[in-house]
Length: 153
Image (tube, rainbow, N blue to C red; front, side, top):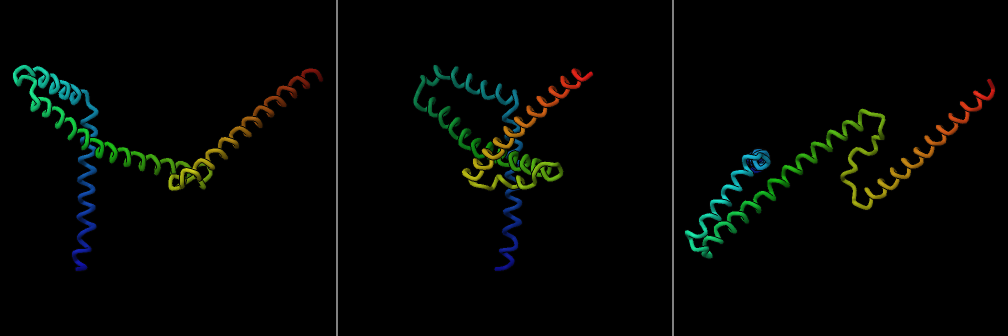
């Protein structure tokens, strides 16, 4: 029984890798102009075949079924690609935060609840507003100092 448990993660990992490769390939292919042209051509041929099949229910069912199946599968493939892209971007952002002067406390905040994230967002916006006001004050003081120095000369 322990041998079986040792093999399952490997199979699951292999299956995950195969799915990721298929999802990547499919999402890349779906975004090409040639894929759009092929899909448009299929729809055009289907539409032109309408008179041949007397616009029957079966004729309509062919395109409805085909597009429904493709849409259903694409939802999962696109979501997989989006999840992977988001995770990769998050890792890159975390690394940039870690090596920069930014606050390391922001690393991993994607795991917080929506309410906690909103609280942090509000605090960051408030801090940014205060910093902008401080910068304006410094600029105004610099202008006043320059005017005062010109008067003194």
